[in-house]
Image 1 (cartoon, rainbow, N blue to C red):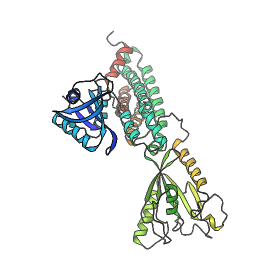
Image 2: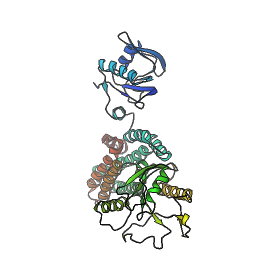
Image 3: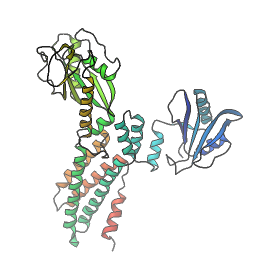
Image 4: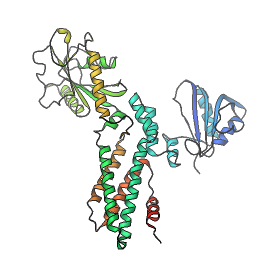
Length: 434
């Protein structure tokens, strides 16, 4: 029998209300022991909580018998006052009743194990909790609503059908249907492969949307990089001085830009230097610029603003000229970090660039590939399908095995892999045993 677990479901610390969740076979007994009986299912009631004559709190209680609960097990919720002492008193009673503190993610794991959630929806719960921007919230909510699971389960269902046809090509070759079923299985595999490849060919937009898009500010020393990240973040993120080489390491700030998470990095001034520490800072700056977007900040008042920049500096997504208050004329975006002139235009341009990078022409409701785990499983599926499509017609068992591998790879994403479904298809459509 599984243990009964409990955990604080609301944020830790002092609060007006704390929500404590209990799940498992002992949830009802724990609720009844504290509240003097079980309330009606799925109705919030106000009850005094007490244990062995000791008053604990006055709280709002919910009794959620399984399987119609989040985890699929008997569950109870205690909405109590949010003081630390109140929570601790309740937890001490739980320990005396034999309940165990939940491990991280254990409630969602039990929901998956009991068929209440698939793995993509469980992951979406974590993404909803961690969402910092509107775009992250929308993407996580779409995934929680099943957009990603429906897409992957659709492919898996199509692979089951294709595998059934490949198995039929093996089992019924003497009946004259083998060649036709093999051709149908190959056509289906080719179509699914194209769909998966199109889904994966997103330049990492889904991961960047979930984790944040990186923007590296590059430029020579004293161009104003540290002042720029402070201005964008609207707080003091990096140290600003007139001394060249002040910034030695990568300094990062998280910005909500038009609903998208942007990870802006201030870096060491890019130049040739004999200072070992500064040289390491330059190396880290160039390494950081290898991913995401880059913004090249130059001092527009200089006669040769690009002097000293390395030839292998990556082509920037945006070039910005600083110190416009000194009265120069340059094509492009000119700003003054001293006066703030041009900053609204720069922020608008950055927002457009970020939106273009992360949307990539995708429909608003298109499910995004958000995790390396998903990408790895899909890569295994495409490898198997590519290999299977090369199988000769006289060896349908090779195609069948690769279809099976592809199906299992996709099933790993949602956590639903059932080979019996293939047998169901064969029995239903090909009348084995007639």
